[in-house]
Image (cartoon, rainbow, N blue to C red; front, side, top):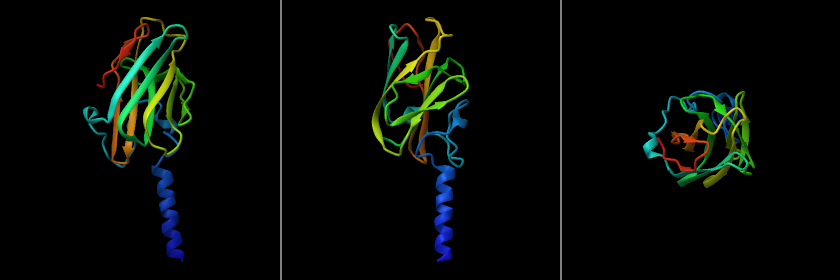
Length: 170
């Protein structure tokens, strides 16, 4: 009985330490956005399951609509808008889908999954910060997790805030 309790407690502790079924932790706000999965490296971006990373600029409300589609179920995601060559988030997400929630970071926000529910399509709305003007460029970074050993960090192509683009993954 004591052995069973010990094994059960150890498994639960491991789950809470290494799994984030309710989204990425705040410590991923800046930097590479690579999850800490026991020395497991991300897969090459060219092998990502993401088949669509489309954005459309809406000048009326200064937002960018983002559509992300995958050819296989996604278990986890973390998305940020960043200035080109920047490593800090900017802007925020609005009209948050029910399968996601905000991760509030000091310079801007990210959005992450809010449950272990898997999905193949996600639509997001990003609002630019007031400090950005129409000639500034933004790039979206996304960490995509299929399972513990298979994850990617992908970057969209850059776009000026006054254009509509279909992003390619770098």
